[in-house]
Length: 185
Image: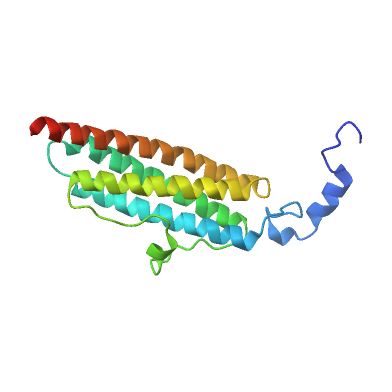
């Protein structure tokens, strides 16, 4: 046993695995407050759904000469936000919870807001603001989960990395739109 002091002896692992098998992936070694984690993940799920819907709207509403690049970013981001929602829903189920896809209260559960924006510039700004909200809240969630739920933490960190890319994309688009409007003046 001294060769692997970090690992519980195999006999004990086997005995524990046979207990409470109805809990699936949630074993005795899971130390997070599962109900709280499920609630937090459902809030992140709502955030991803709201972001998917906002990006989809922006994709369909963006028009004008400078909109073609932005439209493609909006569509790509909508698809990635949907993938994030799927990852979160899957994890919620693994933890024995139910993913909350109900449209009732979706906006209040979401960390980000659903702001339509009247112009391309406003759409990009609202998407950038939403990404910045997601970045801060997801970083806090990952920190909160820490070593108590490394799987959920990893999922949040993976989503966080993409949200940072999205924010960078939106900041670049915003800068390009502002430069274009400055040169037109």
